[in-house]
Image (cartoon, rainbow, N blue to C red):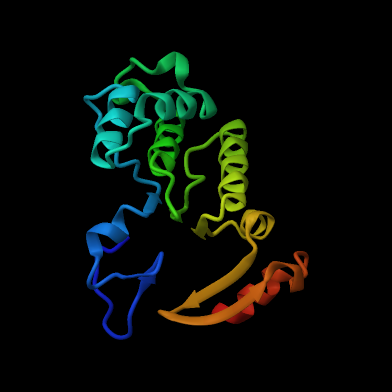
Length: 184
């Protein structure tokens, strides 16, 4: 998410060098983790309006309405985030992460706190974004879910890339054993 500088090499996102164009690169990235990055004293809608202004979105009100409906929070739009359940906060964070139509979406354990219905909403939204040519990087300890939604599986162990395969070349039933052997 551009919070740290590379120790070597270069990073290019959407054709831009991160070291030279950090602010512009950040505008192209959406980020979602187990921490929601929402303001508890603001309502659901106010949070999204704040982020829409940050990203200078012309379509802000329309996009906010659409996303609140998509994540099932349209009826709770005027409630303070502090009063929403953990799962509702995570759904709102999903809307926040994709509000500005990112070209790259970084997801760190995004299913944390989501009930099965909300998890399906996220999965459907990710499939839609992938179809819109958004690059999605997902970190998860849930191997089954990662294999189900990913196009490529990359495993890092002790800071090194140790596995990189396209999903269609992987046997899902055998992968847990493969994973254990890789990270051992």
